[in-house]
Each structure stands twice: as structure tokens, then as C-alpha cells.
Amino acid sequence: MKKNSILSFILFLVLYLVYSCDKVDCNDGLDGQWQMYEWVSPEGEVVGGKEMKIYYSFQLQMMMFQKLSVSSGYLLSSFQHRNTSILIYDPVKYKGNGHDEILPMDTLRQYGVPFDGVMTIESLSDETLILRSAETGRLSFRRY
Image (tube, rainbow, N blue to C red; front, side):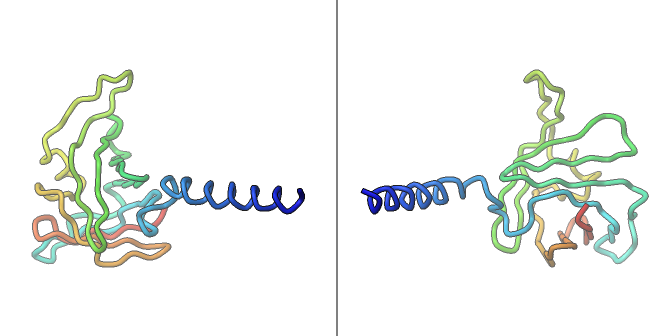
């Protein structure tokens, strides 16, 4: 009887771990909050840094963009993490109560996102993230 209880518990534990993994970090360390500390254009000119107060947050398949210098709230989008790149799409302005405003992709340009939404992950560690695109250049972040 005790053996059946132990086997049942182990089976439950295995099933729990397998099915709960869908909610665990599925983005290889990308999930979390990131503060931009440098934006360099494709031509090598510094566009800005911390003074721009740009933040990215990644969670599962959702992404949030925030400029703390702007009191207009934040923008949300869906994204897909594909090995060494991310695809950002379907941006909306969060207004609450299900009245979100669908936005064109070029709205995200002010956050360093190219029109096609594709950014290469040049580097990702526990503390830093560097994204690159031919259109907007190189964006460097620190985990916040």
C-alpha cells in the first residue's frame, strides 16, 4: 500500500512538472525587465542612453515597452523568441477595461524596434542583453 502511495506521488510530481513547464521561463533567460543604457545607430552614432528612460519587459509571449519620461503609460506587443532573434508584432496601447488601441508597427520605432519587428540577439546573459537590427542599430540593456 505504501509503495502505491509513493508511486502515485511520483507520478503526480512528474505530471505537475511537465505541464507546469509551459509557464516557466520559455525564453532562455530573456524574461524579465531590462533598462536600455545605450542605443547606437547603424552608422555608429549614439542615439541615446539611460536618459531616454526606455524599458523592455518580456514575459512568456508578451512584451511591454515603457518610457518613464512619458506619462502616457506603456505599450504591449506579442513576440516570438527564435534562437538568436525575436519577432515583435501586434503592438497595442494599454488602456484597461478591454479598450486597448491597436497601433501600427512604426509606433515602436521610438523604442528602437524596426518596422519589420525582427531583432537579432547579439548577446544575452544574466545581466545584459544586446539587440541589433539593420534599421535601428544596436540596443544595449541591463537587467533591471
